[in-house]
Image 1: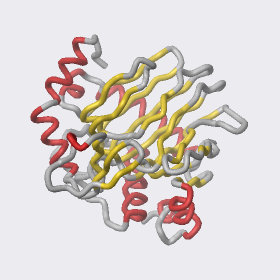
Image 2: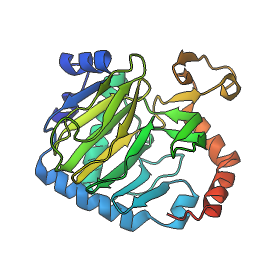
Image 3: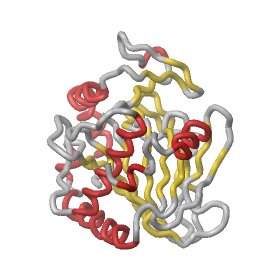
Image 4: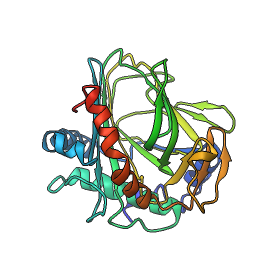
Length: 287
């Protein structure tokens, strides 16, 4: 395990305690400016390489959200061959280092080694002055969701990554809210940890919902989360439960830790993805 990843392992009492007590852990200045600049360049290279209709069609790349004040990209990576769709990050050392860091952190905090075949979603976003806000949500693979009239959405079934790792690449915002706002679904308490270049935020994605308000100044971040490794199955109602799985209640519905996430992905791709993709095309969505 790298020295930086070890900071986030269960061997760090402060980090483990904060994650358990608060639902998140914040570490300042984990990565230096050299890595940050390289990761920015390589994320742009990933977009240039892989934003193709055929990659979206096979669910290795996700639709890009682009407005005049915010751009978001997302695609699936793994350290080794995966039975599910991925794109290559060959030759991109900063991306590879960030992915290794994520897998080491995830494995350390969950107490099991992450297999090389396990995919993670790399998401990077650029916010400009007066950026479009990101509505409150769980990160995850949205198998079934409905758009709301207010511009948000309601998740009916999905796979939720246990933890989300966010790295701030650059940020000109100051003050109380510099980026991500977390809300504890158990207590309703909100937190907005600092978001300075090189800072890492790890949060419990089952317990916490998060949003990003309109930012007055530019900010750029990159995040990783695994939809495969120990991901939990979310069902809003009893009708979306998977047979034979044990569920527990949470404020928004039901979650199960014993559903095979890879098998759920494979079934979704086999039985439902073509219909979802066709609906995207009907709405005019290409990238």
